[in-house]
Length: 544
Image (cartoon, rainbow, N blue to C red; front, side):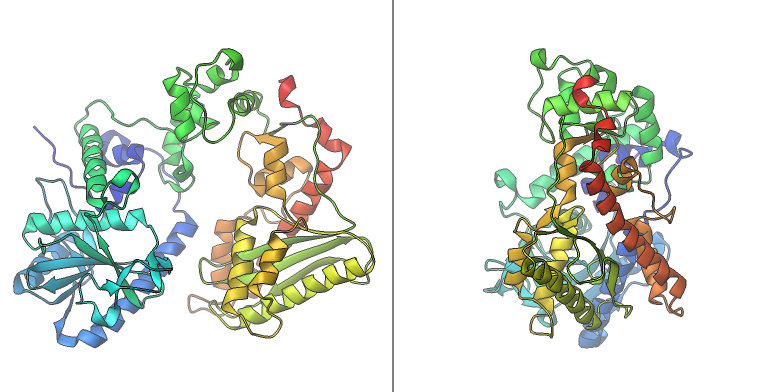
């Protein structure tokens, strides 16, 4: 007996081992993690964005608009089939007819009818274009202009997952006999919600000159094979290996325990590097720790030098969270120092800038300050809080220079802070107290802005990750809130501003302020520890 699997578009962007577990009857009772709060938040925001776009289009197209109601999959599929057969001009939230021969099932946000069939359009809550030229777009009010016109203000922002989802939909439409087979055009409406960006899925726009459809076919065939083997009890085609996505995967408790049981090498060297090591016969942490670097026949690793990988394995075996990569540790210091940490809410904005002033006396009170808006994001009040932060920050720098002293500011992993420093300067340009983008760029490119994460990466090997919550405890710092995390802060923020219709929760506001203060104090403590003799109590990797 052959078991037929039906897979949705998500499998082509999903870990192969996850696809196996989702279709393995023996894994049904395996332990799974709780939903990732950040992912749940993103889903809720994306659903709200899709609803806004749908309401806008429904108002414009009136009786030509058909929306498939929520309900069981079979009911939605039947309703979609009726709309397709009737030739509805626009079908929103379509559940497409299943394709048992191809092993496909799936839904799409919008189908637009042409004279020759239907064209799929995806609605997403991320950017789908950047400033430039080369994209083909249509205003969403002219969504029936399939393929659009050359846009002199936009270039396509590569979003592989979007194109693969559209390729999956095209194949489902073709199997059901409803595709516009004259071309392989499909559209995406992004975060800005003003235009449709059109993709030709047969254009050689992928690495190596591949097309999105060709890439999809290879990936989907592989996932069908993986799922079929799992469903039928065949030899597993995908084994667990730690990758970036593991952090938010519900199956991590199962895979993580499996990796621990086998002491798999990906516990310390993940992703592509783990594959290189396995190819060289180094499959366990123990084997990596015992590796003779001078005699090893291992392809060059991508994530780190081989000696660091061996050092990490030895630290892991010794149950050491942190070991010194170098015998001496150096962190840039200054007479006057400011630690900075920003809190944002998804892509909506940065609602809180926290700063801790320490060092020499410059006539400005030392300690922690919070520059915050409690108006739900997005809000113009964000400009006020950011301007107050920047003006205070600039006054500290100016007072330091006036006294002939040195100044430095510190953060931990500058990507987030840099993003919102630049974005805030751009979004609120011209408002009182807002710096120019050039001012911000000059600062973040200077020696005065120090990413402490870079110093940790340079001087330490961290067997359980380099996150601040992992590293700062080695320096003796403890967060007041046992649940402190970026993911949890998203939930606290929703309550703090009454985003879900409740009264704003002042307790959660206090919690967020304390969380932010602890983050900046953690970087200060970590820096002080790295500059002190205490750091030499951490074992040196060369001595392991």
